[in-house]
Length: 597
Picture 1 (cartoon, one colour):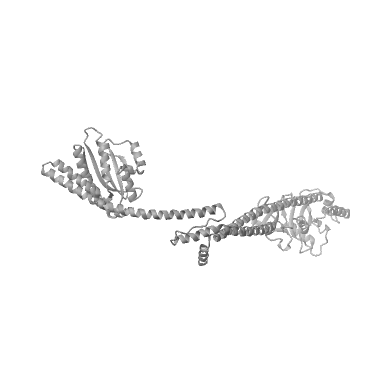
Picture 2 (picture 1 turned 180 degrees about the vertical axis):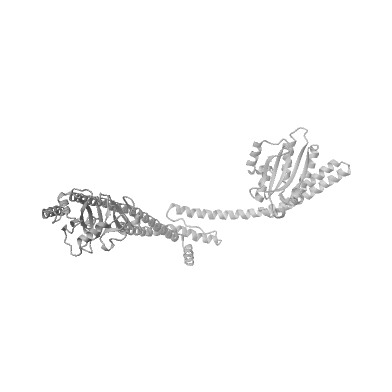
């Protein structure tokens, strides 16, 4: 894969600019459109999903309300039946204890029959005695099993509800083994003794009747709807094999209502008040997004078609625009081969392209002029170098002349003149340093000693200098004439301004934070902190008019060793001013390898 990618990159790099930009344009269009389509799909899908799930949630709410009302009516029906005196008479008596038993039975039957006929969704109603085999049953005819025995057993196992003594169970019918029925049980107490129950009422509602309440929900979304009890056990479902099993989403069923995306399905549920049942709907996500998918397909078709047309138009346009550039590249290739006589035509359409051709031609003309100037300047540089070499001969004459004056003064007994001339000769010799710009610290120290001899003779011993530099620093390289301007500043601006004052200058060297710090201190008038800060902030501003001024000293150190090195001013512990010269520390304390030039 990596090799294949490298081949693709290699091929792209060899293409012309117009081909590259066309490919990048097509990729940009594809990426942008893909992002837009993805964003539209996400937003539209989210909105459609919310609307669809909201619609189903509303249908669930309406359906559960209707089912709640229906079940509430059945509870009220059971209360009416259990309170009917004719029903109580039937349950209290039998054919041996009552002369009117047949009439009581007929009256009770009529009452039960009336309520069955009034409620089409009730499959059967039955009155069962606790103490006798007699019962009244109205509804579908059972085909197998002992109804009384099975019903008594189911009554004992039924669970309580929030409606007084009412109990319910959801099991297969005793007479239809493969069908489920909701049995609503209501015990009936004695007519004269409220603490004694003589029997119970059972109202049976087939699971298929309950299913009719939710079977007509939105089929377009392929909603799979069913009912569960509070524990998530399915009590009604299109698929009868699932009744009595746990719902796959029973852990989702929390609170009054809600919806949650689980896997590739949206699970919606609504609780039935007072029954602890849940109506649950499972909606496949794909069915909710089918309209979105159709819309996205149309968008993709339109975008690809439009993108193809735009890319084709861009390709043709880029080819036309690239022609002048292609001509420029070919002409530049000729120039790179040394042909400076080639020129571009100026007959291209468009003002920019004509300016491009004109500018290129002007550039070639300028190059020819510059080539001529360079050749001329090279000749001038050679002449200047020759003159510089010749000027090196003149200092020897000056040295020899000063040396003669020194010996002549010495022979005449004028030691002061001899000493000054000797110091001046040595100072001048060290200043020139055989043309070197960087010298050892030991040479620079010798130079300031000669300088101080001259100054002390001029100003009657105006300054004494204490040089305390360890031998290990003597080989450190330093730009020529670094210390002398600092000594001169100390004399003229720190010491000499005090009338009759004899000052002291201290020169030290030390290692500090991986740097070599050479310090020049005096006990002169010094400066305020504001003046010191101003100098430190402006010292990097180079001014070639000042010659070997302090800024030039600082700048030369910066150029040689880099930023972070140079001069730094501070107050002196002797009462005057201290200037620190910061130099890099190299191996063995030397810094010759730290020079950048």
